[in-house]
Amino acid sequence: MVTKFKNHLAKTNLAKNTVTSYVWTVQYFLNHYGEVNKKNLLAYKGYLVENFKPQTVNLRLQGINKYLEFTKQEKLKVKFVKVQQKNFLENVISDADYKFLKAQLKVDGYDEWYFIVWFMAATGARVSELLHIKAEHIKVGYLDLYSKGGKIRRLYIPKNLRTEAEKWLKNQGLTSGYIFLNRFGQRITTRGIASQLKHFAEKYGMNKEVVYPHSFRHRFAKNFLDRFNDLALLADLMGHESIETTRIYLRRTASEQQKIVDKVVNW
Image (tube, rainbow, N blue to C red; front, side, top):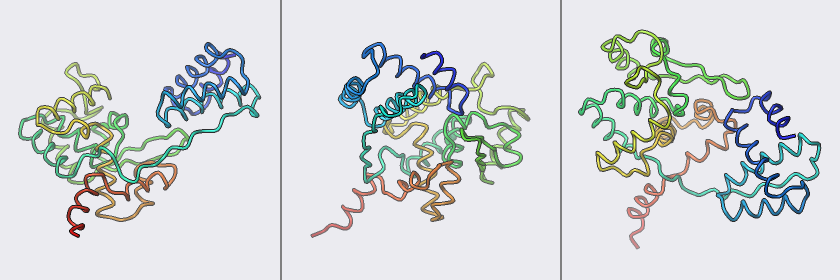
């Protein structure tokens, strides 16, 4: 039945990693709890709640619920746990730190990494999307990405970044194809980017907690709203299904909150 479930998921628009996660979850449940009944499902949920973060718990439960739908046992579906939203953004690189890192990478001749950081912060690209950028996209100024639901999201490359990136590519003799490559001429990996960013954070004495790929996507959103306060447009640019997801960027980071309190509260 699990194999049939896997084949069923493979035909949907779900990402490969999501399919793997759902199948693993169901397999784990069946191996450890055996029979699919309300008592066992609640026991499994209890185990998840005690051992994992709410987001992970809900991801596992989503896999279980998909399986229950597939086996026509919808009545047994398990409720998700409530994810408590923090009233501040965590671990977002500050604009000053972003500019410092970018400047240092340029001064020290790490051109490719200078552009990787700049592209993430100036386009709002997810790190997996960054790897799809080609020299041809720099010329036209955008890249069209297809989301799970078959929707198109356009990733715009701002003019100042385009101009400088074109010069860089010209110097490298790169006129077509992917632009972010490793020393073997292959596309760099998302894991490679994450570990190299940690290395630079250490090298330049920065807080490693805020120097990671998704942090620059957060920075893009924060900077965009600071300069152009249009939440609906930002939701489109970020590729968010719901404007509610984008709303978090209206919140201050914890360090911003601290600065405001230090400045304002003098009684």
